[in-house]
Image (cartoon, rainbow, N blue to C red; front, side, top):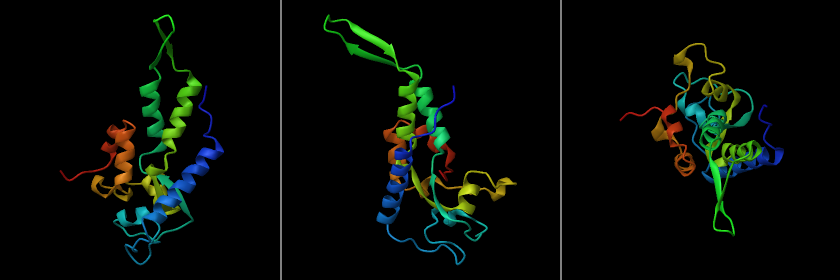
Length: 166
């Protein structure tokens, strides 16, 4: 059975949360003349391609990777609750409960920012013919809120995607 799409209210919450976080960080500087100052990913484009398309929200850690990690962590998990008799009731999570938890974590606004369509597609590897055309975000450039999100949710292993110079 395929996982259902996240509820509208959750996607809207992500949208509003990202915009609130980004606006709270202040208006950014343009990294180069053809960049939109609100496109977070433009600063990591070595070819300095012009921003194109509308601004949209993106996930620093791919939503699908977050969902897969949560599924892996919870699919075989067991809930234990004490019974009045002193015994412990053990039951596995139900698939729907796991999906709900996956959605809540995957759509956490701390893991998002704004980017133009051009840079978002390159970041997600949708418009990349050659590896050199990929947008690579170094670990040190990640906003602190993204690292906090990953560590709070036990997803720090997903930060390996981001290059380091250590």
